[in-house]
Image (cartoon, rainbow, N blue to C red; front, side, top):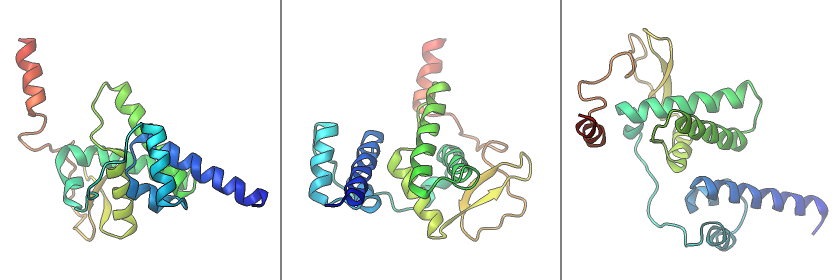
Length: 180
């Protein structure tokens, strides 16, 4: 094995470890690295101390359009685009950095991250497949995730015009009743 291929493999292993630490599923690792499935499973077990979870990845764009996931998805995707275009990061580096920044922002706000790494990765794939687009809110001028080819005229985001039940989750109701 020559030095360049050894460096490439080390980079692939480091990327896989980083993605595993952030919560990547095996399908994400297989798509984003050049490592074998067997090697990825061994790495996953080393890093997480258990076998990777089984099951299908999210496959519907609708989840990203609902109120709270839309706010979080839009925040993440705008960070990703900024890193990719303004900072000149390549796709996977922009993805990892954007997810770290999103997660850090949630920690600073003491908020539960709604967007897991696998959903964030799926979001990027949906944009790349032209299933989602960004629409600009006519009120706040922010860019928000929307179905591709949906009318962008007169678009109002979920922050400017939240649905009537927004923020009324069981967890929020429990906190309110405990604080009374």
